Amino acid sequence: MRIVLLGAPGSGKGTQSQRLVQRFGIPQISTGDLLRSAVARGTPLGIKARAVMEAGKLVDDATVLGMIEERLAEPDVARGFILDGFPRNIAQAEALDRMLTALGKPLTAVVQMDVPYAELTRRIAGRRSCQNCGRVYNIYSMPVGAALVCPNCPGNPPLFQRPDDNEATVVERLKVYEAQTRPLVGYYGGQGLLQSIDAQGDVDAITALLVGVLSSPAGEKARSVAGATKRAKSRPAAKKKPGAKAGKSARSKVAGKAKAKAKTKAKTKAKAKTKAKTKAKAKAKSRARNTAPKSARKAAPVTRRAAARKKKKAPARKK
Ligand code: AP5
Image (cartoon, rainbow, N blue to C red; front, side, top):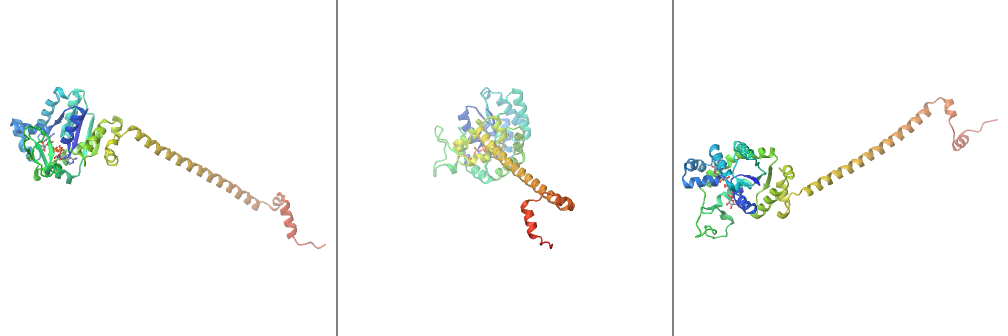
């Protein structure tokens, strides 16, 4: 599995990547985490990236692509990977395609995680992370009054708020997302790789949905570019696999109905044609009778009943 998770800041890419790591046993590659680590270590790259990140802008492509190239050369990605927060623009996506083509390992899926803006800003405002293990929490989903510490790490270190999670930076990050990252939906849609999911609601249900979408057959994936969101809303989590059989039977039902409709239509048309033909024939016959010369009319066969009627009507001739 070589996966890209696309989505606006706060859409849950990091949260879901960590769950997919557990599920599929492949590493998460987050350019945001790599950059934050460089900033924390104070490397030259980190020093350069810090101001850009705090302004909510994108770090330059050359820096990010260098980091990705290095990471993709590590042995743990041989079985696959989940790209979280990369690529961020078309140039990065094209460079990634070139890198993976050279490695003979193209992407297998791209999933766009859709979340409305109001929910994104709420999530970002409530996000808290552990500096030690990198786990992400949210104050809105933590028990009321719970200490803001990491329950998973020894010594329960305090959780911290990312410096780019302030209001002004979030507005800029969302703008940058719309202008530079959203076009990737079209880019990967054109490659037949993209699926979109509704990433609102229960975290476990979204994971189940993602697993279903990522496990679906390749042919089905290409057909469901815009459809997966609707399926996610209308089906329970356990049944969200877009099964090829269900799609096929639904399609053949529709085809069958259309066929029957066409048949009935053809029958009605044929009946109407026969009726019109009979009517026209009768009309022509009566016209011929009326316009024919008297002699011919006389010669026409006369029924006995008509002859009797004629005789009754005719006044008795005087002898
Ligand atoms: P990065 O770290 O990649 O940030 P981002 O893309 O803005 O995404 P976030 O980490 O904010 O959100 P997320 O989607 O991972 O959500 P999360 O799971 O945490 O990048 C940071 C900066 O680095 C960029 O601004 C840029 O400067 C630079 N950068 C990074 N990559 C770059 C690149 N490729 N090129 C150039 N520059 C680059 O969830 C958010 C919160 O919501 C959490 O609190 C979580 O607990 C909660 N949550 C998750 N799911 C749910 C749910 N279903 N319901 C309720 N709450 C939920």
